Amino acid sequence: MASILKRGDSYQIAVSCGSDLNGKRIRKTVTVTPPEGLSELQEKKWLNEQTVLIERKYKQKKQSADNMFFEELVTWYFENYAKNQLKEITQYNYQHVLDFRVLPVLGKKRLRTFNNVMLTEFFAQLDATPSVCRTIYVILRSIFSCAMKMGFIDQHPCDHVILPKAERKLEESKPLLTREQATTLMEMTSEYNYFNFLIRFLLFTGMRSGEAFALQWEDIDFDNMAIHVRHNLTNVAGRHWLDTPKTKSSVRRISMSPQLRDELLYHREQQKELCEDRRNRQRPFKHPEMVFTGIGGNYLDHNYMEKKFKALVEGTDFSHLTLHGLRHANATLMIAGGVDIKVVSNLLGHSTISTTADIYADVLNETKAQAAEGVALQLLA
Image (cartoon, rainbow, N blue to C red; front, top):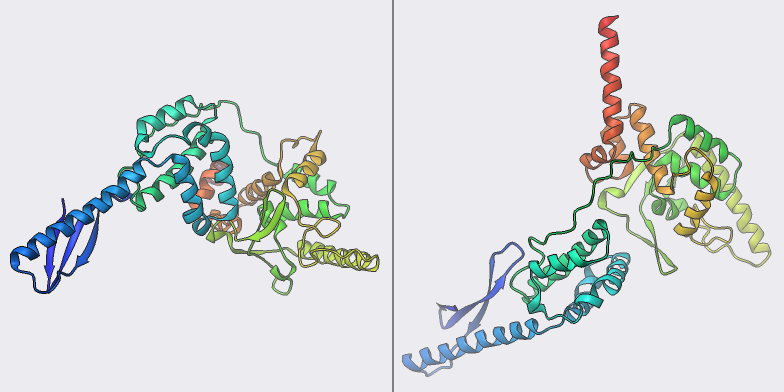
């Protein structure tokens, strides 16, 4: 029901426009000024007519939204919200999931048919793992949250949706590198080439592979023995570009050891020689500003580098390890070596210490147990 409030010579007409994301009612306020010369009765009649027109306008908009197909809402979402609010890689991933998992089933359904029961049934019948279902749920929640803000819908259909529950696996998780295995990997990559040095660098620093691939020489401060993480290399459909890191806390400073500094300096000299050789052969080195590139200076491709790494560790005791696993190995070795969890969290670029503690709970518990044993031995000595 509309409410009318007189303000001087004008009136404020407020009409209900549904609810916001927190369930609070949204009211749209319009200010109108009656024509001069109207009697009190004429002004009252005119004001009622304006109120009816405003309410009708909203109802027509709402009715139009109710008849909107879900695929039309998705198009509106990407054209008006996603391109301004989401990273390009996130847009690409969202669109890919929607195209293959959601739109074939829900695309032709009207918005008015969406509710938590309908979506619960959709997920129950979806041939997908619980983790994929969770990803789809996050995307749908973003789309419908935007629809609520725009007044297309009054209630959020994702509220109280029941998702498939992941079965707990009792099998033991594959271990990360032990100190001895880390030493073995360092020996396996001791002969210099760009790939071997990349593996050593990831193990030394604990950086995400995308962060290392995006590292530029200007990010290396040899005088102060520091590496500044400022970018992440994004790859969408074979196109590469430098993007902002994963989170705000991912922008960070990492100290480097004298050994890593020396290896970086050697790597830089080798790269300069390669650049000069290609220049002499009139085959320019494409990205001399980057620390890590392919032979021709191209940006590194994550999938290709992952395959090279799997070939390197095949047949070893740590054949399960991935490039990202080197980051976890770095953190595990730091924690086992007694580095404070707050320092580890900062070096890894986690947003909170609790994130680090959750990921490395088993290592922390083992370290605590060793500390307790150490105290006991001191007391009983």
